[in-house]
Length: 171
Image 1: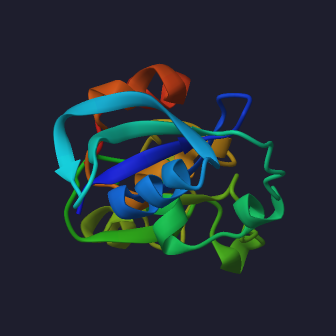
Image 2: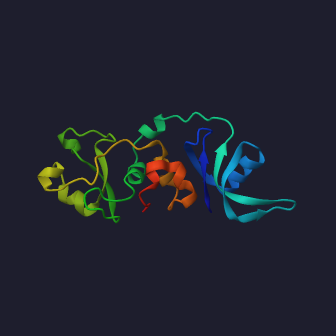
Image 3: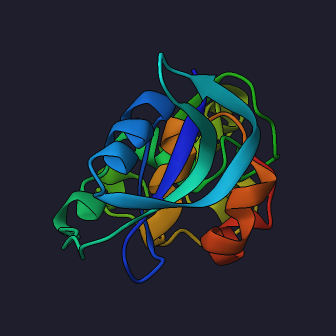
């Protein structure tokens, strides 16, 4: 099933939904289509161009507390499903940069995606003591990074609305 990017009235990405849900929002006049696909959906009396991007007609307040929750899926999405030590996309686990046994917290600034071999190599040490370097400094996810949790590939029509997140390829 294809996915559709949902934008707030401010053009900020707020969700990813199915084409069916997007069509319902359009039919109820709760959203407008911003980008269309070349294909159409044929109903009994109407034909609709399938949307790629829709924009809500009324502002929706998005709680940011959900982005503070750490989960494996969210960490993998933030790190684009790549080991932050070697770049591998296989046998992924979550690693604490500063091990919990050494006082490391379960925070966005201390948790990264790691492949099993790198996680095993690092063990209960700090990265520099294991002669390892992080590809990027861990940080809280950007507001639109949830998009990577819901799709396997980013459609070209979404890229203008995702800003810097759209620059790197999805795993």
